[in-house]
Image 1 (cartoon, helix red, strand yellow):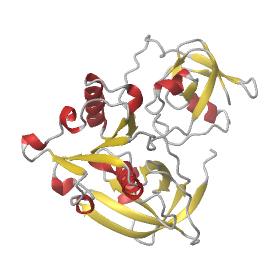
Image 2 (cartoon, rainbow, N blue to C red):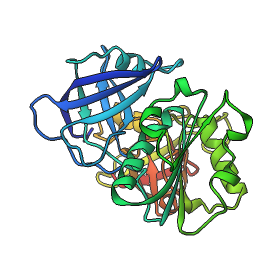
Image 3 (cartoon, helix red, strand yellow):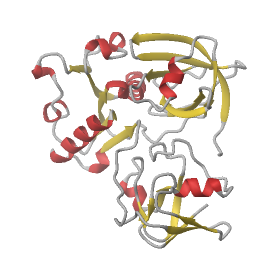
Length: 320
């Protein structure tokens, strides 16, 4: 795996809600961290099993001495959030250089829609837009005020509107009212739980928003069902352009797993099709895209995720 890493120490931790912990991380050697743009995330290696998980950077982009993360202790965690919540000040973790597939677009106006812990990348965008004089409005949705992190930092901002499930019905998110009509100079960003994101994106499409104006980042892959006998479910052969080596990918296997098991140094991180680290170009064959990170334009340009996508053809050649 080609990711660049460094050792980091937890220099501060506070818990703004019973289920959300906010961590400030600095390099153990005291050197500066990497530059990043709002919307970026990093990999964190933690826990007894050296789990790799992705967390959005929610602090200001111009601060290189520390990175700030906010982590929700997920009820159905695969172990990563529990391991993060076990960290205390002084504990160390390995972190990667930031990557970003959810950056601010060059639009004139920005509508930011956060659901729960999805506030994290959008908070970094708010800080950047405030610093640069950008035109924006943040809609922050949560089950309740007590479960929403960063309320204190945002509640006096006139360009932030809160929407809480347990408060009056009229203040809940209404995308037609709160985002306004589609505008070619306006970009809409959404991050949060899968069901929340699906609702916002589907509603935006109903209201006439063009796909190119909609920007999303998922924390978990959208649920998909791939039944035996359906297109993309069967076995196929993947060929590496650099060596000509061919590998059989059986039903139920991912290309990435097959390559790693065969000793190929393939790039990867999340293994869910949501981070973009394993993206390569398809040179031949018909891909079956099953990721939640590539845009339609990127797919049309041949981009492809090794970890989640498959092939509709019997052979697939990739630039690797």
